[in-house]
Image (cartoon, rainbow, N blue to C red; front, side, top):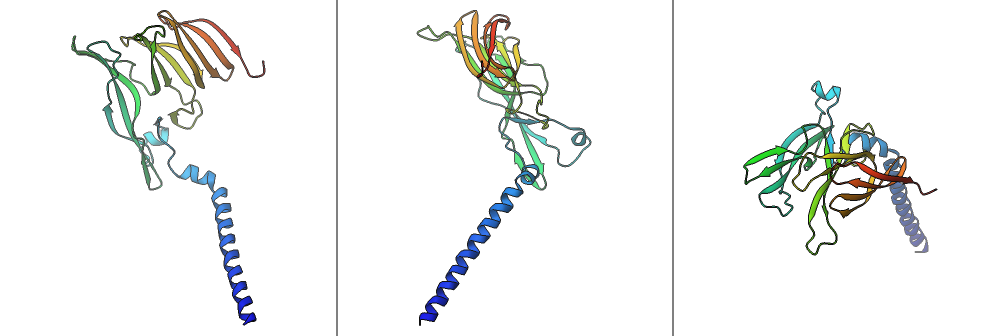
Length: 235
């Protein structure tokens, strides 16, 4: 009986060791193939627009394709009859038998005036990705008044991965409450830390670039940088 008990213990230990070894082998294989899996499977596609490459333009079957474009919920700034309709483009990314939809990303705005019955594009047609659009409001007003909008836009594939995404550097654009022609403030932005309206004519922006952190005073009317200091965590 004693021999039977120890025999059962040894078998149990053998099963536990086998399971543990299998789990360890799985983890090792998973980690060692991480890079291959990243190349083989579709990437995360929120706020991502794929750019055509020479092989894709020649009809290669793995090229991302546009499957839909639609207008989203209009942005209103409280002014009657004027709306900004975001244009979403949805792409599909086939990759080795796997397809993944982007879900739609904002690439432009259609500006609608229902009183004048006119419409126009905010930006000229081009490859771009609009990461964010923020209202600029006077802080001291009891009922905050919109004095403009600031847009964070990716225009160039700066990291060379064939995509426009939040991993690329961004440009900052200003436009009026009436969504007039956007004025570029700066480019090469990694992240925006603060945006604060001083008054109807001036705006403070704090943002990061490869050169460091920029604290700038910007003209609301022209988008020109009026003053700027650049510093780093080691200054």
